[in-house]
Length: 238
Length: 222
Image (cartoon, chains in turn cyan, yellow):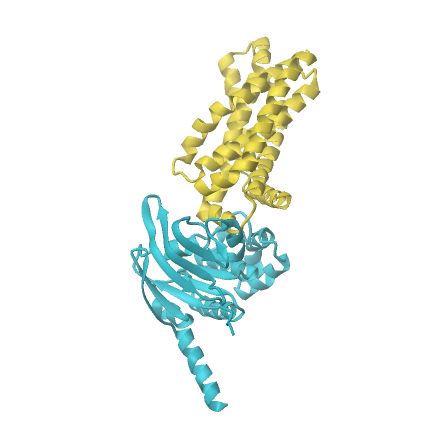
């Protein structure tokens, strides 16, 4: 009898990616399963952002294997980009358009239903006059919320969150945690980088440490511990 | 691809309408170019009339560079260029969409400049179909070439100064053929204009095909 092995959502083997002539990723070996939440920790320049950009097909992998959601990043970056959502340092918004127009543009481009824009914006607190205010006139935190609303409306298969807590107020940080949990529970894979482990580690199944463009360590995150405890208590009750 | 074309063109045009950069900066710049050249040439009406086609196309060329720069500036703000790539939009659709948005703006600009040279230089258009066809073909060529070179320079810090250097020499055939076609149209010698229209059509076709094929790799490399 053979058991069917599900391929991982993220598979890197000896992956090297160059930013100019500098090896931003210097031989990454990593597998992340579908539905997992993994957080990347590491000092500045460790390769966290580069790894997320490589997962989005934005940073070309020059050697080694890199397969995201079953697609090779070198052969089919366009297909990967259609299925991932990246919350980066930059807002990826058009200043002259309002939040509704920005999110609808994202949805139209992704061939998604534009009716999903309003509920997503509402959930992120972009309501009332904020909906129709040009994004260029919003605060940094509000702009960040618009980007998250776009991500939520698209509901990608792979969420790539680069320091997602930066610039957000306490209630939005809390909401972000809820959104990450909802996304993972619905089968999406979530990768996030953070300089704030106290916020990110409790959300994650796996805590992966990067240094010098490589994976150098891994521990279990808060989400996995909670899931294990829940499963054990269920088993005890049964 | 066509869906992405409409999406990108609609977005770019909406941004231009909101920002009003075209109305308040590029159009005044183009009109100012006409007026300053007129000052430089002196008050003689026949001299102004004979130079009018060349001045018109110089103003269009300079404005095309500004419009292209503007088109890529909106994608450079806060990394929106990465955002567009991340959405998985067909690169050919992005190319055609940006070219369409630039072409619409250039077409409007040419109508106003046409009115400008009519009023300022007192020219009359005898063979309107040649002037209109030349403008349409040149607009396609300028927009397509502009987007290709705009994409080439988009990722560079020196893009504002590099783009005119790259694109103006390339656009020389449009300046020459457009000026000659318009000279024919203004003088009423219709048959002589068709050879220049052929050059404009070839220029537009080459850059349209090159853009559709090469925009993806250019976008990735920039």
